[in-house]
Image: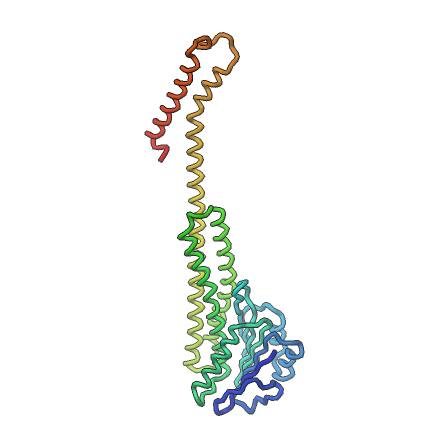
Length: 319
């Protein structure tokens, strides 16, 4: 599907016109959004806009790393949107010219819809202001980056729950959750860090024709990406701390169990010795013929057990 937004020289917005019916020279600028295009629609990138074949090839061979390429009077951007359900990166390509702005994506992108509606409202609100392709590119990038935040906030909430409710679950379950969170953070990092590097290049590119105010807008996006990067690194450190805490907790629990078992085994060792001695089949043994021998041995064993328990408690083994 291709949708069009054309802005005439009076700053009026015209939408919904077939791309083939639009003459670029009759408008201040146009935006053509290729959303999940059919092959015949994709061909218009070459037949109608005459974009460079290498740029078109990059559009069709996903997934490219975020980048900026310069082709004569066209700046070609490869951006990454974020699928909120899978946290996988999805490619969004932008062609930015003096009077042409083209967005191309093989998956439906809600961020593009939000950017589209925002730009239309902005132009209609500011009478006589037509914006331009560079500001349309900023609007799209800004929305794509803003859509990174909800997924990261969700992960931070999960980490807070893990930190506060860790004692109510088994260590194995907690460790599984921590490694799941770390895996999702890694996915986000693979998307956000290259976008941060790209935006740094945009800010320092001499090929991007923009004024000081427009560069401030791109600087705001770069600041958001820096914030996202810092949040990811902080969350990764928190998962590492949680992992170490759970490992220490598991070790302490294991030590407590081993100490308890050791105490029990130590108490029963002399009792087992006595039972073993009197379980031997010799005919001549002390107290075998005594009517009170059985009770005497039981009392000795009880005294040994109680005495050892009291001695271990005094030594602090039960603390």
